[in-house]
Image (cartoon, rainbow, N blue to C red; front, side, top):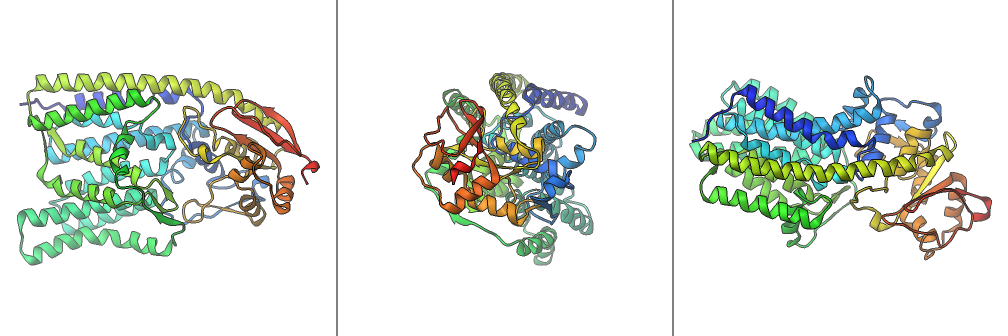
Length: 497
């Protein structure tokens, strides 16, 4: 049988892995995450607008929105450290919540500290992080930690459990809506499973289910007050199998496939040999989250890639819900191999992030060409919404914090962010769609309407961000201010109209 680790030894290992996981963050000023520059620009505006120039474009409008995971933390961290470091601190905190949540769940279920749940560190640099889904990732970390706490309170007085549950559910809801949904499934399936396993009296069963359900009522009331926008889209069911790979999909597809197949085969072998077992009480929660994944649409209102976000939680739950049963000698060999994979994968990510940091540093002077308090339109093609080693889709949003400018692609969705656009700014954002500007100037396949040409001229500047080097085919009315292979900035002249 495996030997138990002392808490001190486990804490030392956990802290060491967390510090190692943070290495890529120290190699670049701007983490190369797709949505991250836009999020960072929003953090600059919160909790209050820092200049009168920005008040012409933005209004801070705090509300109990189910997407405040980053908004509720980073602006307050920025009071004691530079904003760029506050953003990195939030990423590191998210890592600690995700890995720590899995480890806490493991301890509550098995009452032992072990190396096994440290496998969660393999799942920190996932495709979700590269997309920049920071609120969701933080929400998932909170969901795991609070679910572990909920289980720890299993035998406590019902009033304490309801009170704690209210706090847990509300915090996860405010962090992210989808994370809240997963948390609700976890708690609901766990309570149902307990009733099924122990077959209590009807009165006891109803009380247990009520204690589990009551904490979710306030968030559901808030949800009913937050009208949903967008549409629901389902993709091919076969795509669900491919999306499981997203937990290991980083920068090198062949390398990532080998790692994914290797870890899946190794864990499957360990389960087959009964070296690892799942806690019986976690069977139904695991099934519930898997069913949620199978039936989750790919587009859920304004949440793109809703289904691709769930596999990470499925794997983290599996790691936290299982324990090593074979000899400690085999465990050490297994974990040493996993540790080597972790080190190699992290080294690849560190090299990519350091290179991306140098690339971004070379583009920063472009913002010096912009007038303070101005307007910057952004153009990118439909292929721009994708993960790259150094994504540029939302890089222009940094003009908000660099020059106090309004950027037309700034995230200000009423149901997601506590920022509203002033009427003139919203008009610019609605008229100057990034794909239309790209097709009009880079591809020269679209003619802008007179209203959109006039709006672009009033805006004054336009930035083009590409996934690969490009050249504008139509430069009428554009005067170059900064030109690089993948990022170009132009001043709009009266000749446009």
